[in-house]
Amino acid sequence: MDYAFHIALQNRKIFYYFLQDLPLEELNRIPEGFNNNIFWNIAHCVATQQILVYKRSGSTPMVSEEFILTYKKGTRPEKEATKDDVDQVSRLLFSTLEKTQEDLSNGIFKEYEEYTTSTKTVIKNAENAIEFNNFHEGIHLGYILALRRAGR
Image 1: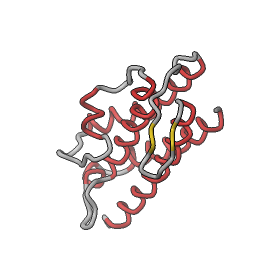
Image 2: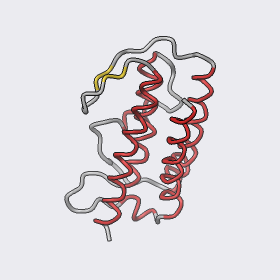
Image 3: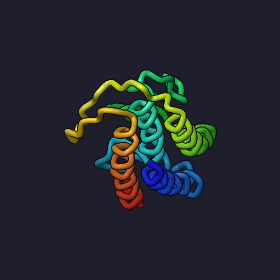
């Protein structure tokens, strides 16, 4: 699992770069033909990781239920992100990953509610969820790159 966490960390560093480097206006921009923005995609990745690993294993997520409801699958930006929102998600990118690695090492993920993703991948345990999440975040990195190109 160390390699899976290494990949996750590399992707999250890219997300962090976008949050720190891009102006708030660009993070919030929804180009024509899209229904979300760069900020939403990054926050969605944090929420999804918490849902897939923590909620489905019956563990308490590290983010609020409000955060999950705002950024889970099927949502879209309802308001513009603020600097405080960007700062919060910037911190969560790394704290959630570190805590997940710690919790996995400590064996807290004993049960799991099996889940079939929209790509027809069956997730049977927390380890599967961590691995699948890398694929999921890679898809959203692609969306972010497309949003950047479309917004220019």
